[in-house]
Length: 424
Image (tube, rainbow, N blue to C red; front, side, top):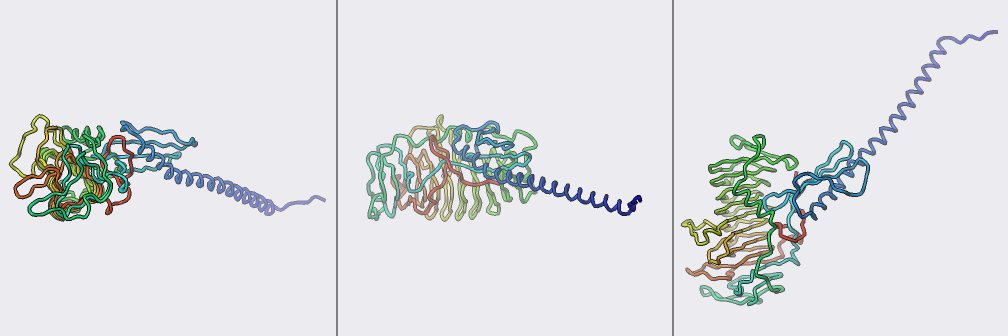
């Protein structure tokens, strides 16, 4: 007797077989996708972790990078780390790119010389065979490197020294030169002032009519250039350089973040708030009650070797002037090429003004306010009662307590580096 299978049963069998095949295929696809996504996720996490290897390599790198270069590290299939180190004002800009297959992660930072508040010099006064003299309510606390003659108490305008110790800390002998600034920093500052211009038209930005301008540090640098005076009242942040051949005025209505300003004269209006680098060749003036946040930098570079005796009628020329009640967090730096000594003051910190960070001056520094951090200077001056007192500090303070335990400053030769700020 022959058995017949109904067509409906056969169709059902085929349907079940197809369903099972689809389920099996789905399970295989799910397993593959799970493994793939797990590897991708792991690769993305490792991208972030390995970016720290790139940043660390740049902290140890002495020379700047012309191109983005691939570095060797723990060998891992499909994982790449590339780094690039360039100058950014008086600091350096570190960029690391990690890649796993097609996934990329970019990390950027501003780096500078490492300063440890408890160990680094609070004061380094160059050896000029002239003792430091402290007068009035002056206070120097920390590690002080002084000339051979050491420190004395003095007398100005009826005031003697009122402290219980001349130096509240350790005294060491200084040397005939200040610690040297890295040559690439000096070359970059000179290039900014003398020849910098945007290279390509696509690198230009427009300031007119733009209330807010932002450019990521992961993109190419954007610039604005003018032969005339520039007045800034915009909100500008990021990887941007603004240069004038005449002067720049920063209005208090402006909000500048992380940008670089370049001009012979830079004037910062009273009550301005921001975070930027200002690089000038003639003068920088900071008004009253300004707040420049870390890591800002005010840099005056004067190539005056050929005219060492030039004097201006403007009392603010040839100096960085910081008015009362202003607070600067970062670097204040005066550099000149002439070697002939004089008694002109190059940095003036007014009464009740504060600097948190680093002061570097290869000229004369008049300290009437407070520096929390470190001071490297050739000489101090005190202009009182119509006289100039050399290597005198009158009612000024240099201390190492109201500052982070570790912070960063201008790039110095043979000094370790640290991250000052993570970028965007």
